[in-house]
Length: 419
Ligand SMILES: CC(=O)N[C@H]1[C@@H](OP(=O)(O)OP(=O)(O)OC[C@H]2O[C@@H](n3ccc(=O)[nH]c3=O)[C@H](O)[C@@H]2O)O[C@H](CO)[C@@H](O)[C@@H]1O
Ligand SMILES: C=C(OP(=O)(O)O)C(=O)O
Image 1: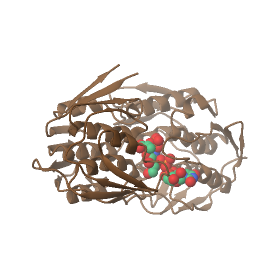
Image 2 (image 1 turned 180 degrees about the horizontal axis):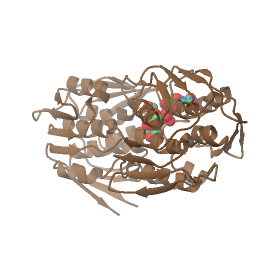
Image 3 (image 1 turned 30 degrees about the horizontal axis):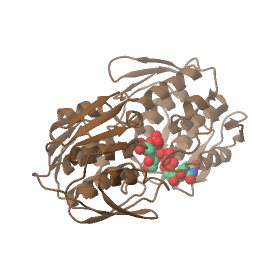
Image 4 (image 1 turned 90 degrees about the horizontal axis):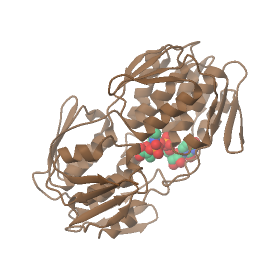
């Protein structure tokens, strides 16, 4: 099993090219099910979750081909299997996103329930309730969601009582081929929702309001294949910016999407970073200073993203002063806390608040990655810890960061992968 070894590193310096967004690419890949002909998706990162999605789609009958490095062709014309098995779904929760498209296009779907995971229970009730309101008959049997609809799904006015990225995506995809108009109220407003809506509209869907909390979808009879370029990854971008900030560094993120990172850039500015942005780049300069601690409270977009919480916790651990990190999205997203504590971090946990008192320097230790962003936080901590940090179970990291150790090495970090 691969591990990472990180040694105290100099201030990060230089340019890093940001990859396509995992969380935009996953629903976009699944959306090919809705089309009648081949889709060409560009800026698709090389990640374990992307490979899992391709396997899942291939199992349904989609023909998949990587053309050049970042372009993926998905031809859905021969889909003949409606089942997404537990073996694949258990490794990637986003697999549930085939449910809406299969049901809308073929009237039938059997998708394994994703189950709980390290960061929280993550139920799918909003996905299922919304599809039921569109006329689907759904049962849960032997760990599988079995869904059917006679004829087409029917447009509906759906109010979701929690803001859910995945439910918004699943229902938006399902509604594109429904009979009549669907309105999704209290919809998630994440940039990845807008990216998916843009892609679906390119296929011929009629979606308006994506990026607001009320999305209107007028169902059409068919969608066609398209070419679409996936949005840059805002979480990968934020992770590199925080890594540079803790080391007192000066980096530029290229191929980035600054407009998707307002909350994160604002916190980095509060931490003492000088931030500049262009159309597709962001630079951060700490001028060698130690960051100031910041208070963070996660909330749905445009609030501070939960997927950046662990990285900012690492920043607070070595910052000047005390910062409070409040997690409001997932009930168990503090798994990195005991690992950071093993490195000498001073963190007091009070329910969903973590009070972090910054220390001058952490100490390298053997730590365990427990989920994707927790892994990133341990790497960030390792960059400024004294001595060697070894991060175990980095398969989590490979779900969501393309060539992270190579990109960090190019910025001057002392990091190596070993088995
Ligand atoms: C592949 C992908 O895009 N993953 C992102 C997506 O996950 P995901 O789409 O799974 O997250 P959701 O937005 O659905 O979850 C938000 C909250 O709603 C709850 N909930 C969700 C659905 C439901 O049917 N019932 C319910 O109670 C969840 O348990 C959680 O507490 O958004 C999260 C919140 O920004 C991010 O952390 C993930 O990186
Ligand atoms: C929690 C995440 O992903 P997923 O929803 O795929 O588990 C993440 O990207 O931080």
